[in-house]
Length: 277
Image 1 (cartoon, helix red, strand yellow):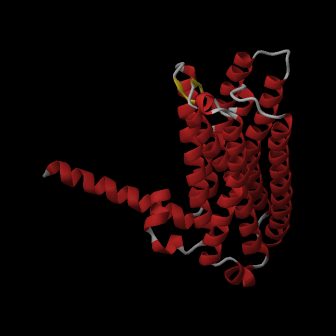
Image 2 (cartoon, rainbow, N blue to C red):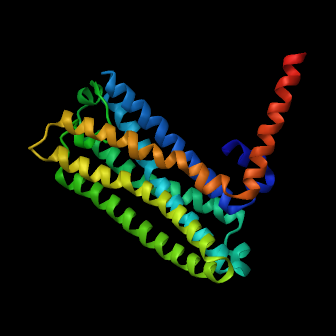
Image 3 (cartoon, rainbow, N blue to C red):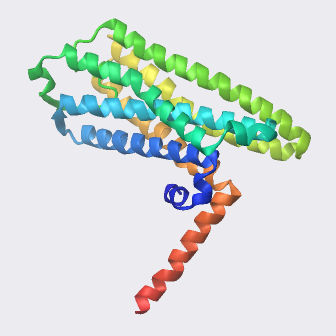
């Protein structure tokens, strides 16, 4: 799907598909790094702390970027449905590209600050030591970090969650009200509920992260036990919504579905010809 968006010029000119491509990239990066780290932790593979901190920077940035992107997608859909006459002026392809770049930069600000603080807090010898890496590293006790840094992480996640949730709920309430007037109620309700389920699944990992962080900070539970619970939650709630993302946001779009289906059909037609030669 991502390859189709980049190859078809008509899709690259549509803001919603540019946002979808950004979401898919952030999800792919997030899952690739998270699953790799999880497998290495389960296999008791030790890596330098510096590499784990870099992994933390990339994972957290892609995680926050995903939230920003689905929020932008909700606003884009709101403008397209509720303000159709102004949509092209407000949501051009060039403006969307600039917004996507800005969202990625904003998503990287807090992880980059935490990365620099953690790097500065550890001695060169400590940073180059090896250990079992897991996301997030701050609560693993890798470095002696201040309580203020931990609180800052929680605050950033809470503010991101709150701002995204309020914006998305407002957008879809307006979309539902408009769609109910112009299309059958069942179809409007089905669309909103499907998107609502997807967004709800995206918000679950935030609650998972907060619960996990507080469990490890608590003296009543061991880090290893909390880490194992964290890995189970990652497997269930971090992978699932990102697997549903192409279905909910992508393949339900008729134009994108048509191009994806055509490309798959063409490839299936070419393969037998190559085998026969």
